[in-house]
Image 1 (cartoon, rainbow, N blue to C red):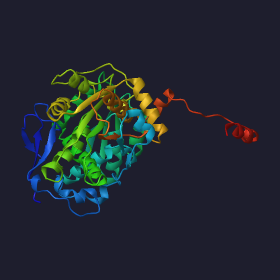
Image 2: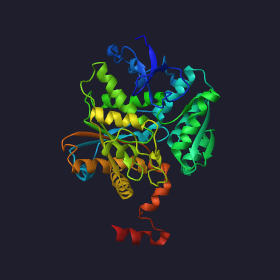
Image 3: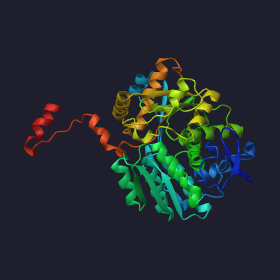
Image 4: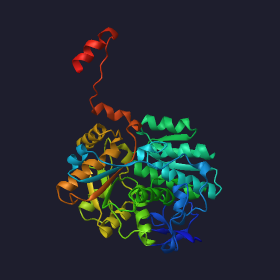
Length: 402
């Protein structure tokens, strides 16, 4: 399929060239890739997901050499404990912690590095609370592209060290607000002619689309009713929705799942706006949440998510700090150790079910976005059954336990 590709602003539909270096439109709106002729797009044969869905992707080719083996993550039905907890018959967990750097960000990083290669760029820069910086550092190292990462000072040390070991240049920024930090750094892109990527960039979104394509295959071409996604910079939820929307545009599916926007109660600029019926985000600042991976208090792409929520009937829910910790514990008891931001969706689904916004027999997918090993600080909120035992006492103590 011959592709005519451009970038389009998501609310006012202003057009920009695909090669645009700035991540947002001139009026501040999110940008997304538009490929003309998707009505004729077909799923092809191929070893890799990006080969099978090449008609839906903007790149002339993705070279296997830049891949770290992202994708092919498990989609597993929740066990009885989790089903009973949320009150559903059909809850599935899409385990994105199985990606190479243990988070969903790897799909977006593949797309960003593919874009850098296509544009013959030798340096790429990102703004991250940790997961994306870790991911792009690994992919940049594999592809031979220099990576610079801007992180807020509260970024967990596990994530910072992981960036450094891949050879990235890491700048910990002391700033009063993460959202303001992002805006300032992004404003340097045109001045420096440097592609600076945040979590809501149009190219990252193209990588996240591939999660939709993968789930489409895993579910034997069936489409879930709802997909719950922890939401911060907005790129992840945009991408997964865009993937299904384009499959429908191509006539491959006949319905689109409703997204569930999930945020921490202490930082819920999008969810609060949706609940209050507002059209713009309600900025949050000077907050604290254990869900450090979703701490954008004033997301630049938030208004678009609110617009889509009204247009497509999306759901939205926030969860308290206590509910986040409880969700993390419940998931761990079923074998999934995820970081706090990842755990938010479980309690959000439970609350939406309890107020009747999700039907008991609905098919719901929750995306497990990042591994629990990415933030060990949160373990202080959990009790571990660990004891020191002298060698000669092992048998007697083990007998007592049994």
